[in-house]
Image (tube, rainbow, N blue to C red):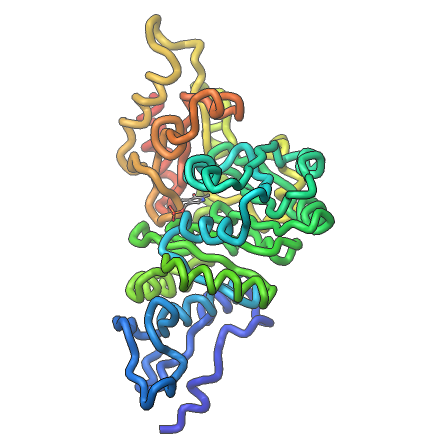
Length: 400
Ligand SMILES: *Cc1c(COP(=O)(O)O)cnc(C)c1O
């Protein structure tokens, strides 16, 4: 059969985002015309003669399902290259493996607990130094630069306090310092923010969250523009072996197709619920970057297309009965919702409620948490795409 037409890649970089999300990486299967990329559940590939093959030798190095997904990753972040990993932390780990003992990394003091654990408990032992600064003020990043700074690790919006850092300003500082800038773009997703366009060298995602979108896959990815950097990271990917299986790649290819419609719904519900919580008499403070008085609002408006469905809040402590503190009250609310499931993770179609201090951020020592403004009574919501009225009703009953 003539496969010339089938091989022309769709999801061209010039297309609009909604179109790219549907077509990115999708090339009808050359052997059958199957519109969906098959799950190539194979560990190896038969060679015609020693060294004569179709570009696939062994599935840790190459797999067609993963290849289609990696192409999609590149396209949706406006990058040239994408690489898939077995988890978000494996993707992060691979970036740190670009460094050598003695190198320094400047990172956000308020970041994902698992990244903090990887940096402090694993990589510090190998002589890599991590300097934690408040990156919401780019001047703090500049002040922390030394001759050994090789990487700046940024997360914006941050987990769980929704702090916003200026990617463009920090990219300029990193460039001047001769350091790479990697942005953990998990919370925003490529639908809301594209760090490569703002000068970042690498974008990292926990694909587990919005890209997968259905709470059924653990996966991570990296996107970049520089071919040499891609070669180094591909070498790490195949040498260290933290690759995802083809079934997971298939699920993520499917997830990406609905990222646009899902994110639109997450943003709409997020806005409604953030505003409703803010006016609730028992709520003391709501963290959501879409509020005009959020300290990062101007930067968020500049670099994001919308504000997302991640919200954190604290309850008021003043009207509690004697003997009950804010932590008890937060735990009561956390155990009282029905539509919001009490669980770690985020970014799925269903709503989740989480207690960062005892769940996602328990790996950060209490003093560090408090210093960074993460109180033990903070509640984090991943607002799903259910009907907002039902979600508010659920929270209303739980908060009381
Ligand atoms: C979940 C998460 C990670 C880690 O990703 P895994 O897929 O769980 O390994 C990293 N950064 C952020 C912001 C996350 O939410």
